[in-house]
Length: 237
Image (cartoon, rainbow, N blue to C red; front, side):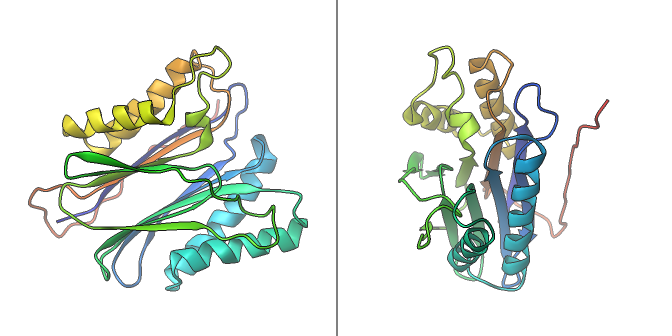
């Protein structure tokens, strides 16, 4: 069994810099974590905020901290720095091979969907964002690992796509799109691209907010011992 992960993201229309930041971390006890932070607002200010948070969170995971503790710590740091005047949303998807579990840690409006045994599990309970309230705790869920399972997480730019034109899809419709992609045995990069493109279509190609989709899967196929990473990064004009 192996871990496959992919991400697709874009910035708000007419804004050159996305306020979403992402990182992939190899867990010291085995497995991978993918983090996405959505900074308040958009542009350079949101990017500086999300980069600072994701960097701190990634360093703590690399040091062996548990995901829930990571989320609480970066929340306390942000609250102390900005006195509750600035917020951010964060999702951490971790395949933890030491416990054989998928750990989903969420703060703010970043839901997740898990494909397991031909059905979709939704993780969209309300969770307070980072930085706003003095005492906040993340939402942490765990799912037992199984070959063939997959998980997707996204920022609220995906969820809110189509709101300007009255075409916004309910969360259940995103679950159906994810289920259809998994039934078609799509690769993680294809699932991420499909969901992002759907959101872009709903916004008529002009995203109303920064958008990020992350996908992790455990393909039920023989794997080798080679670790691979591929990144595509658009350069500015």
